Length: 263
Image 1 (cartoon, rainbow, N blue to C red):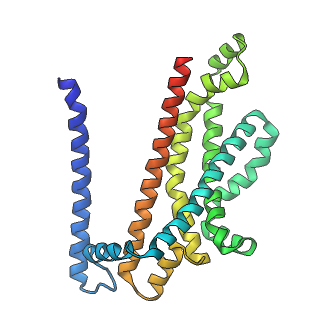
Image 2: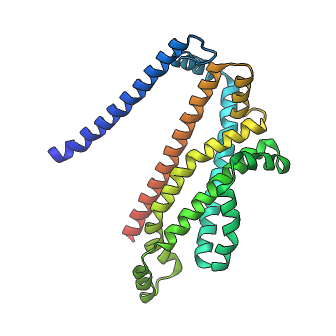
Image 3: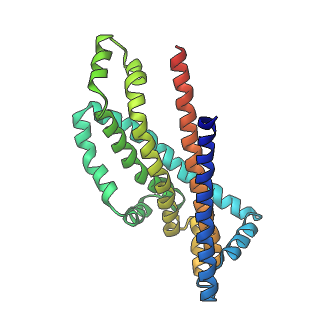
């Protein structure tokens, strides 16, 4: 009885602590806003929430959300797939690993603004967030997977050779379970980063109908309530996107494990 209820109590405690922390900082925000006394400088959370409720009733709001969400998602998924393929190739081929080292280091070290300005010369502004999201996610997935592959237990690989397992079976039995924590870490880190960089690219490129354009307009017209409302939307979508993707990954891993166990 005690062992079954203690996890529930621990979960409730964490939720209460998280909720209390959020309420505390909302109260601080409200107090500072009241002390400043000028909502053009710092809007109150009540005003920002009221404006958010107004925005979600507008058709243009959902069009902007879909525009940015679709492009950032495309950039993330293409980078994740490319990172996995290139990471596996770099693990198997030393020359490919050496070939990939300079561009990966450059992308990882260079500031986002530099890539945004360069990409504006080569790509249309409507595709800018796709390219920037891809560039920010690819090195993380590539390097994490490569590190995970290099850390695979050699004794298990030797055992797979002894039993003459095919490449597909070695991937399922050895590489997959040992590399999954590295991939999960990469996705957790890159999911938030791709949203930040993608929206930053939109603010600079100003593609029509994007969230970045709405943020820029809020800044130009000193609409502080719009600025905070759209920022809340970005945070909410980023968190929801991260949770949904990781949940799908965990569900897929569970189904894969059941299938493997059944066989």
